[in-house]
Image (tube, rainbow over all chains, first blue to last red; front, side, top):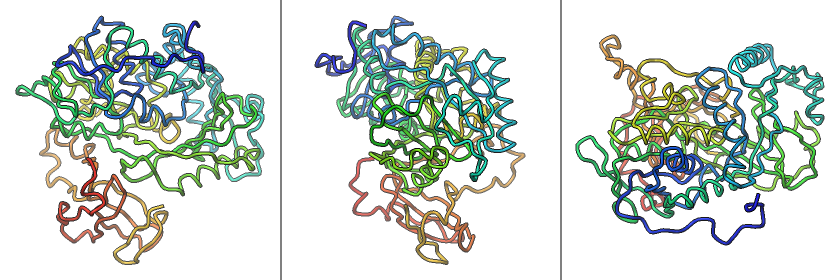
Amino acid sequence: MSHGMPGEHPEWLWRDPDPKSSYDAVVIGGGGHGLATAYYLAKNHGMTNIAILEKGWLAGGNMARNTTIIRSNYLWDESAAIYEHALKLWEELPEELDYDFLFSQRGVLNLAHSLGDVRDSVRRVEANRLNGVDAEWLTAEEVAKVCPIINISEDVRYPVLGATFQPRAGIAKHDHVAWAFARACDAMGVDIIQNCEVTGFVKDGNRVTGVETTRGRILSDTVGMVAAGHSSVLAEKAGFRLPVQSHPLQALVSELYEPVHPTVVMSNYVHVYVSQAHKGELVMGAGIDQYNGYGQRGSFHVIEHQMAAALELFPIFGRAHLLRTWGGIVDVCPDASPIIGATPVDGLYVNAGWGTGGFKATPAAGWAMAHTMATGESHELNKPFGLERFTTGHLIDEHGAAGVAH
Amino acid sequence: MLQIECPWCGLRDETEYHYGGQAHVAYPEDPSALSDEEWAEYLFFRDNPKGPFAERWVHSGGCRKWFNAVRDTRTYEFLAVYTSNDPRPDISSLASADTAGATA
């Protein structure tokens, strides 16, 4: 690694260009998925006369607010395919991007607390194995061997009955991931244009021919919407609706502690997921706030509930101090699976609906979206994830593997 | 935590309520006459505005009645609360001083 170790950054990793009047393709949204889309448009499809339009600053939305968990242990074939493709890309990206973004394959435990949980979990382990995803079922005693600080006593409200374990899962430093992609995009000639909000679409009949922005009109026959929580707002400007609802999702970190937590622990049943960042913060997330909201903040009782769950699982956290809480805006689909593909407007493509779990999919979402934008056809990975599934009824219900704890 | 005014019980904590999503979505009069696209639209597609939103709540920890509210999804401020029998208020007249000038 010649560059990119934390603390050794040059002053600027990418240029700050003014927008040109036209591009071969435009990606709306400079978060992780937008950056990955532009990266693979340039790398896999040779499209370098392209721009990323970001209304705020690079990776300042959900890319800055997630809990950095990476895993691929989803139930259905379609999901396992795209999330496992992502995990394989994560394993190569630090070297490919020449940037150590602290990808740490420390494993993930998904806890089971009821008989129903146990049956679903064992089923998911078997489904994962059939799809080539590493997965094991662990008893409570085996869980404690992987993560000794978990309370496996039977004398709690929801005892740990066991867990699924994916050893190749882990965490990565999310902001460094964004910078790594941004630097690589910039080096291939991609214009990353910040403070440039898309305010409307230019159309010729039903075909998109460009976008109106706060920095002027930018023409392009190929436009990709990668706007997460604001996807509905953009879709409305383009003249259609998406089957997503935007909700606040909160997360928090503790003060810095010595390493005590060796893996990632998630529990759908008691609603919390916990890991420890390299620096030492305990990073925790929970479920979404129930109401629609674009405020990037949620209600405090959701945090209280999440802390109660964390304390029951990890009594050692009893004296830990909360350092910071924050919220993002997540766009949730009815089946807890994403949308990647064509829209009712020709030339306009969408990547949205990742709900609470988009970070882990960043490279594969970019890979599939880039293919779709460059060729006009869905990639094998995202064919099942088109908007048309809501009409055909071929939903990909991942509430079990995704639902609360993504 | 939000403080929500139930039309029957008055101001209570958000934890007494459950959310019901977009209000004023009627069940189709003749579902079997709908095309697949129309049925999908009814089943899965809802408005998701950044701004005033007419939505349903149920006071599940209180009187257990459903009611409607208009709430600004940017600020979370409740602009109106009304019963399910009341017509939808004119949302544009409800925008508060706080939110009227906010960027959409």
